[in-house]
Length: 68
Image 1 (cartoon, rainbow, N blue to C red):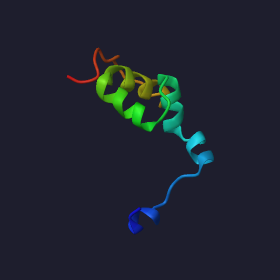
Image 2 (cartoon, one colour):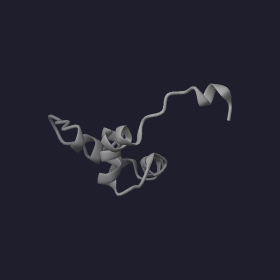
Image 3 (cartoon, rainbow, N blue to C red):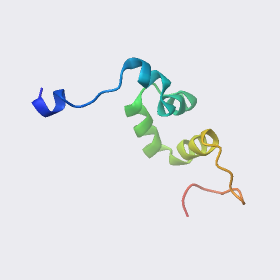
């Protein structure tokens, strides 16, 4: 392993388990960050719906699609 990488901060398993992104992944039914990233690219509408709901984002007018 590269010395610079070995000195990089890494979250503990408990921090990962308690992270907001871990909860979003769980809500989307994916096992880890890599799967979450793949889903966000493959199905951005589903990803952004869960993120909006999780973050309790309220729009003055509901959006019809994730990007215009």
